Length: 333
Image (tube, rainbow, N blue to C red; front, side, top):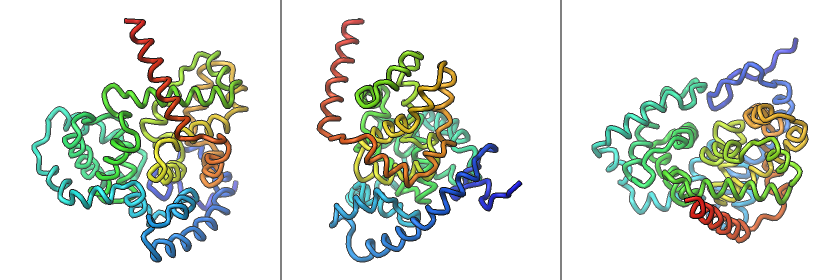
């Protein structure tokens, strides 16, 4: 039996599953390493030549092809607007760290810390930093406080940046600007975007949408974790990071594109299922899916396979579905 040259732990410290498909991964990475090398050289040149924000078209093109790991913190901070916000309030994070923390929120976070990436061999060293980021943000934004899901988002950002303060600012931009009202108690925009994703799939791949409905699997069961965690702990780590590269620059419509692309990539398998438990298992196994493992090809497909998806169309659909939900609630009360 051939032995893989790859470790059972990935480059971010996550343990691979015992049934991890090393052969497929090896086939994918043999070409992806070449891509990474080429992109790294071009990114280094781009980042040194000028302020990346002065060339938005080139920045978008480069981001969609992937940001090299060593540059992710800098590019995420600049492309998301987090760096600009930090410059306006440079002492905010240090000031928040000195607050007297609410005991109930502190206890909630402490309960979730051991549950955050237990399969990451390096995460022990990040737990205090993650606690600091989550507790300071909870006190900074009392409308959100602490919501489950934030630990996975902030935890993965911290693994990449290794910087508490950058993690705080990136979390702030995500929660307040990129996916607002996803993590509040009512989760209004999260619920709306799950409805939007369902409707976009109904329009683009009606046979799949009908099959899922016929088997009785509600879209919130499928997509809540996808959106609330921004695909962290859902898809392979490098694929999640490639998604985030684009989300920090282009916003939340990327999350919908990714969702549509996942469902289209699983079309054959979905239509072959004949019971709800098999269908649930299919969606729960995305981390091991070889199509999603090939992050470079998958991200190319994200911008082509779902077709044209204008922000104005998404916003109109959001308004329509939100009003329908409100009307339905009024009728039921």
